[in-house]
Amino acid sequence: MTEVRTPSGPAVASHARRGYLDWLRGIAVLIMIQAHTFDSWTQVADRGRWPYGWAMILGGFGAPVFLFLAGIALALAGGSRMRKGLSAQEVGARARRRAWEIFGLAFVFRLQSWLISGGPVRSLLKVDILNVMGLAMLMAAVVWGLGRSARWRSAALAGGAIAIAMATPIVRVTPWLSWLPEPIEWYFRSPSGRTTFTLFPWAGFLLGGAAIGVWLDGARTAGAERRFNIVLAALGVVIALGGYAASFLPPIYADTHFWTSSPTFFFLRLGVLTLAVPIAYAWNAAWTGRSPIQEFGIASFFVYWIHVEMVYGSPSAGIHHALTLGQVAVACVAFGAFLFALVKLKDRGVEWYRRSYGAPKAGHYARQSG
Image (tube, rainbow, N blue to C red; front, side):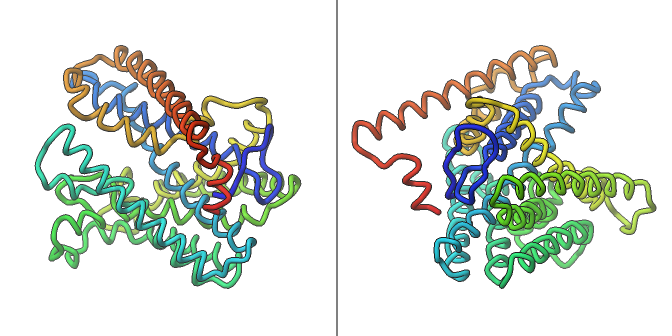
C-alpha cells in the first residue's frame, strides 16, 4: 500500500496509512497464535472441554480477518495507483502480478516446512491460506480491472463474494470435480480432510474485503472516513444478524455443514469482520502513541512465516498434544511475547542494514510500490 503512518488517530488523506487496519491485523495475529498453539499443544483429554471449544471458535476468525484485510489492501492500493496516473489496465496487471507472487510464496512456505520437519513429498502440494489468498487476490484483481467505476467494482466484488458463499455447499458435493487430481481438487473441496482452506468459501472473504476497500478508498477526508465507518458498523450488524437469523430457517441445501460449508455461517462471519473495521477505527482514534498490536499487524506476514513450523513442526514436537489447557494458555502468552521480541529484533536488524548500507527507508518502498 502507498500509505505512511500518521502520528496519531485514523488516516485522513488519501495517502495516509490507516492505522486501524494494522491494529485489526494485529488482533488477527494474536488470534492466529492462540488458535495454533491450542490446536497443536492441547492434550487429547482436554479437547472435549468447553474452554477448548470456545478457543477454537475464536481461532476460526483469524484466517478470515487476514483474507478480508488483504482484499481491502488490494482495493486501496488500486485506487491510490489510479490517482497517481496509472490506467486501470496497469493497476490490474500489478495486482495480478502480486497475486501470483503470493501464490508462489505458498509453495516456498511448504518447502520450508518440509525441509525443517520432513513428511511426505505430497505435503508440498497442501493447500494453505497463502494458496487461497494468492488465487483469491487474482480473482479480485481481474474483477477490479474489468470495472469502469468504483460503484461497479464494489458491486461486482460483493456479488462475487455472495456467489462463492452460495455455491460452496454445491461444490462440496458435486461429482463433477471427482475426476480432478486430488492436489487440484483440494482447491475446491477436501474430501480427504487434507486441508482446511479451499477457495469455496474462503476466497469470498477476500472479495468481500475488496468490495469494502473500494468503498473505503472514496473516503479521503476525516469526516468522510468517520461517516463511512458509522455506516459500515450498521452494515456489519445487519449482515451478522441476517446470517445468524438465517441459520434457524430450513436449509435450502440437502447437505450442508454449518461450521464449514454453510452460507449462513459465512455471512455471520462476514458481518463480524465488517463490524470489526469500525470498532478498530474507534479504538485507534482513542489510542495515543504506537501500539504493540499495530506492530504485530505490520509484521503479520513475518510472524505467520516463522511461527507455524515452531508450533506444528519438529521444534516443538515434545509438547504436541501434551499440555493441559492451563499450561497451553501460559505457553501461548509466553510464545506470543517471544514472537514480539523477534519482531522487534527483525525491525532493528532492518534499520541497521539501512543505516549501514544506505538502503531506502520504508516510506520510499511504500511510495515505489504504490
